[in-house]
Amino acid sequence: MEKFFTQSALLCVLFLASSTVGGCFPLMEEEVQKNWQTLMAPILDVNLSSSGHESNQAGTLYLAVYGSGPSDNAITYYGVEATMDVYGFNLEHGQQTGGFISIYNKDEASAINNVIAGWNIEPESYNDSQTHFSTWFTQGSNACPDMRCPGFESVFSSEIVPGMVINPVSTTSSDKQYITVRVSKDPNSGDWQVYYGFNGEARLTGYYPRSLFTSLSYKPVTIMFGGYAFKKEHKLPSPPMGSGNAPIKNAASFSSVKAATAIKSILLSDIYQIATVSLILNMMVSFMGDLAIFASCL
Image 1 (cartoon, one colour):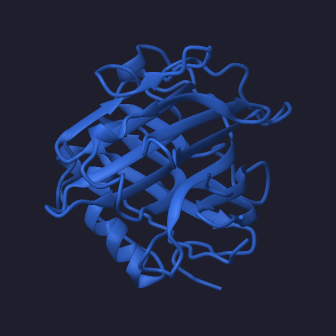
Image 2 (image 1 turned 30 degrees about the vertical axis):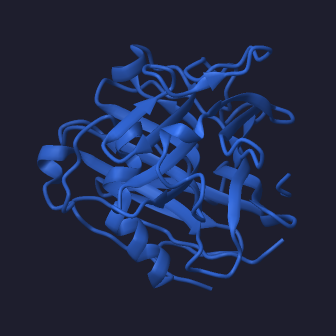
């Protein structure tokens, strides 16, 4: 069975608004820039501009992502786990926000294979503005969130299902609520298992069968975690990311971020914070803690 274990890791902060992109660590930045439309498509459920230059037609995505993959070091990853705060906001149709972990790679035809798990608020999809536990998968042109099409297989004993409402959620005036999510490969079946825990240990909820994918069962994966905010039209206000607060106070956080390898578990960080600040009609996305702010690297 894979082990979950401590390594200093790479950070990529991606700020995308009206086709503006910034970041650090060129290998990871280039990979995320090249594939972000496909990676985020099952979450956003829209056709994003392939160039990122037509945000007035395709919407505007703000994305802050950490990532580490086979090209970064000699370690082979088999999964990722993280504990993240969850928040609630009153959003409009066409607005989305959330936090997630992801594993992905590409097959011989360069088709993206990925699994994503986390929380999101998406009134257009759920017909409410509540916070939901969500999962997504992509294989090439096939992509699907939660259980809206064949893909995710629930474990019979689990009462947790993708798409369920998370309640209560964190507010700036109350205790933080958090979820722990994990996506990891079953070493026996090759299926990709999804774990979920609310204010506690993550437990197996279900899995994506290896038969859904063309490359996840046999090729090394890149692991990512981060937050996003999206608006479908320019006339809509930008929704908050994370807690919606500045990083100096009450910022959202990821903690106990772990990567699974065949040998041991790597604790990627003690704590990373994601926050957003509104400034002159633009949104600034920052990671705080011992890493970086915007495109600067320590």
